[in-house]
Length: 192
Image 1 (tube, rainbow, N blue to C red):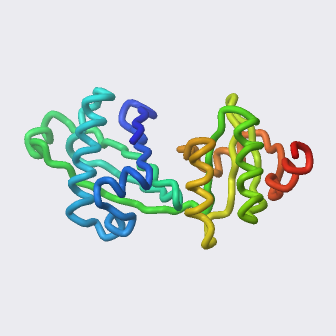
Image 2 (cartoon, helix red, strand yellow):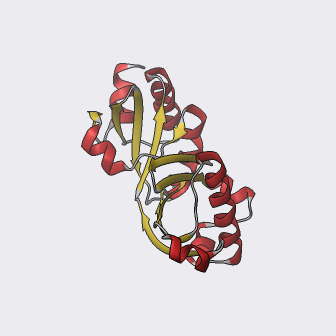
């Protein structure tokens, strides 16, 4: 689990599928608002409060972005509580959850060599396609995640890089597109 402070009252939490699995949770538990999910959420808020020194009480808005086989990103906005309202909450957190999903598999890589090795490995299992981006000194591979190979591809990609907490839309807007839709094939043509 990774934490990042976005603004004075907004934090981002990235939790991987492995983190959920270790805690005995699935994405369906989150959608159903299960008791296990509420406990994990309380634990995450406690950790964020301590690590980022943020006072979390009162009403919070939670946006959950599912990243297919990678995990999920939670954007938590803490609504300011006035002094008059402070005594009403006394550690109570009111949660409003919005769930959205990305249909992309997005991983980041530190070097082009990692991307080349990934392309060679994916070609061995007849996975092609993907788009390659460069942004802020890192390479990013993006694949459609709505097929039966998504989880296997995510496991292979994790051997060479890390699941990215960037939104695919942010990458498309601000990243430099190197190869669109046929990254694996074009990389193999040039680096075989």
